[in-house]
Length: 125
Image 1 (tube, rainbow, N blue to C red):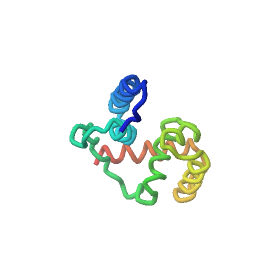
Image 2 (cartoon, rainbow, N blue to C red; image 1 turned 90 degrees about the horizontal axis):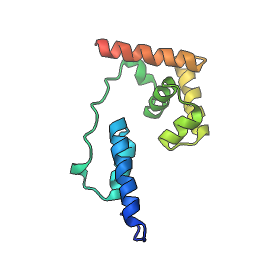
Image 3 (cartoon, one colour; image 1 turned 180 degrees about the vertical axis):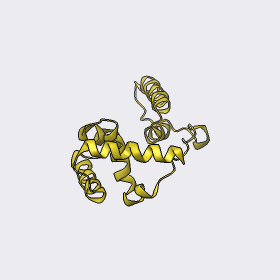
Image 4 (cartoon, rainbow, N blue to C red; image 1 turned 30 degrees about the vertical axis):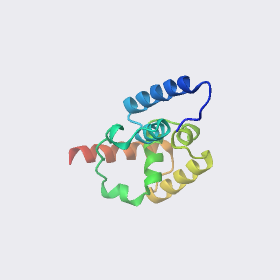
């Protein structure tokens, strides 16, 4: 719950606005955090997006590595990925190094191409 302060109503308004923005952007984890902060019951939270079908190629990577790979493929920097996932930039770098090693890739461009190819194959199936 929100702390009892003189600015509680303003804070609640900002949190509601953040919830709407996160929901619209499809940022489920962020929306869940804000919902918890607002003290909203689970049944009033936004519905989860349908899960993407993972191809066998994705099975080589951990969930965290997949999240990082997808955000890097969107063009985000390590710092931006770290901020989005609430990780340190060092952790993002570590996930990227492991991903490159597992997939035999050597650049962010190659990773982006790989992610796009996997997503295209998944939508064809």
